Length: 149
Image (cartoon, rainbow, N blue to C red; front, top):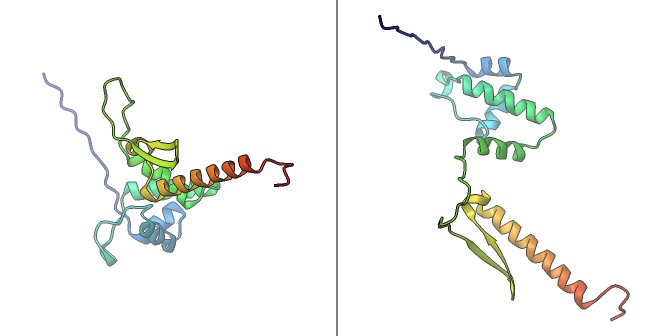
């Protein structure tokens, strides 16, 4: 005799007020999180908008992380990492694209964009920071401490 297994899934549909009550996050803050992309938009719109289990879990997670002192930017990074597919480790024979950013003659920054998981703005910021650090080192080299020149 064959066995039949029945599974049931409870689908939770909450309105904004219910989500706010259950998560402990004010409705206005939930709207702000949606605007920032920290929470997914609800199903439907206006009075018919509904929130599910994933909304509640994410709102609780964000609240918990904020209570530990994380900034919204850091939280956004953590949430993004959850949704990004894992990057396979590099293996011999693999072909990967690299960006070579020239800092100065003889000095370059090599970045594997898909592995670094940096946005273009973050990559530009990193490049500027490395350039500034190199410029400071070059200045120190030409004017060592104690040298009056």
